Length: 445
Ligand code: UDX
Image 1 (cartoon, rainbow, N blue to C red):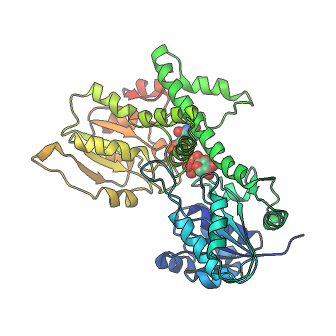
Image 2 (tube, protein in one colour):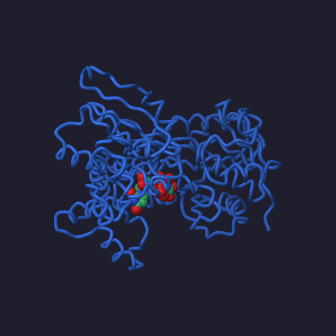
């Protein structure tokens, strides 16, 4: 039986906040630290700064064990363990930006007053934990012992709480028995399988798993394009493959390519790491290239079908990189909308939760009657029907339930010309055809 530990979590993004709240839910006392005062204030009011199922409920249930603060000194000073869950954004060359990690590491070094385990949860290049440990040693103020452990996170957005509480496995990477014991004590109450390995292997597992999933998707997308050429159906192919437990039936959905905060970044980061070591990681490179093309595949198809987008009303259904999140990072919509606007399309975009974020990147612009520079316009609407009304062409970028609920006949009824490019294979091809819709999807006839 383990005792509750005092845990500080640096960073209250998806990884930090969800891990912190889940550790509190499993009995630990958790202090969530962020530099963003506004975020801290709203969390103190019981509101989650991210859109994530079950999170606010758990914040409420465990409020006695949860503290939110910008005061890292008091949070770190007496912590048994400090989790680092800050961002490691992609840099232009594909490498991970470790500035935020370094900042936290230095703050830890300058504040801790007792022996403590620093746990890196952020996805970092293999070898980073060694550097973080050295960096902390270099700046350490008090005579205490600090160790660094790796504990990568596998949560997916939209299901982050469930993914954490019911994780398939917990990976802990440590270089000492003491560090391993501390992490075991933290995770024992979760009752989940624990894989205990070296720090470097743990760091590698994170990339290995994410990049494998990205590869799986790119493989299906690559095959989907071939299926179209040879008259096979990728959905049937996927179904037939998935029964083989060595392959597995999940993550075989062809579509408009993967987005989000992990796969695009983690594939590029591993490829970059390989390059640094003089190695060409050919498989992952292929996954990246396939994905790049896949994101604008339907746009290109539409360009072959239409003379121009100039002056056309284009319905865009779905802006986020997947359903269940308001996150737009690497969303296919961000690759396609600029192309459509540049061609002079008048876009009517609908997304159940993503509009607010999208508007920040693309503020609403009304119709430019003179269409100067051939530039189009974008408006945001409250329903799929509103977007489709009078549209000349429709693009489906996200498979939200609200969008899947649109009946095939609705396209025929509402659109000026029922021409639909579906990046998520939402509809049965026959059904759309029977309803008089000219329908293009991915990897199907
Ligand atoms: C992913 C991993 O699932 C998670 O384990 C990791 O920790 C972080 O990255 P996330 O990015 O939140 O999580 O979403 P996920 O549901 O995995 O989807 C990623 C992207 O792949 C989405 O754009 C999705 O549309 C796409 N995808 C997924 C496919 O195109 N086909 C599939 O079969 C599955």
